[in-house]
Length: 137
Image (tube, rainbow, N blue to C red; front, side):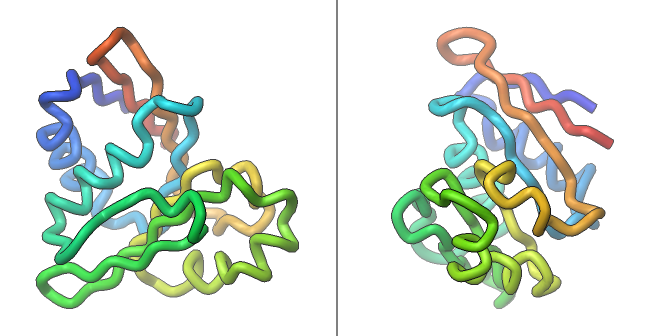
């Protein structure tokens, strides 16, 4: 499944994504630097009613958000990790297997740790303001 959108339509794209894949818990987001992975996660979190600021976990590795209905969402950025052991040490497995929604940027850094049922998505730049989210089913 593909979701194409202009950046000013990102919230509509986030709603479509949520409607189609609300049963998935671990979302592996692939894409080049600057493709908009964090921005897309931010839009999804907005649509899910996250309370407080949603930001990039580039330096913290793991951000934890809480929705208005008291659900936890994890947002991981594994870019700075060198190997799976660093991911384990950072606690990513706890997030993956928590049963909570978990968005993972740069999942290839810990691909062996991802659950088998993780949903893999790739975000591509298709122009200055256009993006294509490809979902691998």
